[in-house]
Length: 210
Image (cartoon, rainbow, N blue to C red; front, side):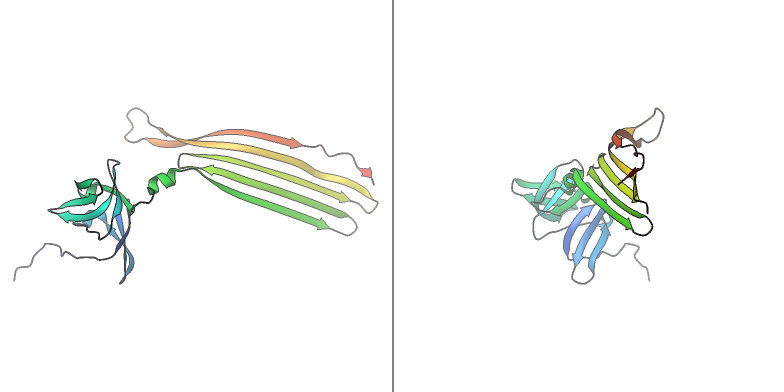
């Protein structure tokens, strides 16, 4: 009996979560979220409007159907015809493009604090604090950080020694730029660091009683 070499077609029903990097993420009631290669999808239909960004950068919001191998996106300003391979991304209709959100700069902040002390023949006290703040985008990072350390030690005879009293602040900017050389087959990317720093350290004074 002859057998057919044609692949079996399957119809998957669910909610399209997103289309990105050549993968369609579908939420289903029977298998949870599943990822499907966009190149293996032959037709696409939605009950509600979705947002699509085409490879050309054009954004379209509307309901999607498939006719004669073409995607038909019915939006407020009419119907646009395209193909599945031309869809670069998809997300919830009316929402902001995830690519724009990812490119937006945002702050991250970290803080630290440390207190130490010891009693006995000698007494010591130490305080330290620091912070790191970053303004991050896909193309550059602006970093600010600073620290402060203070410590004293008092001997059994009452002599107090200041062992640390320093403040440091610094900022670093790293910028990603494309670099290409003549004859190279692909462009390389690199980061150029730009640094500015401020440091202040007070000299440790001679031991003084008290």
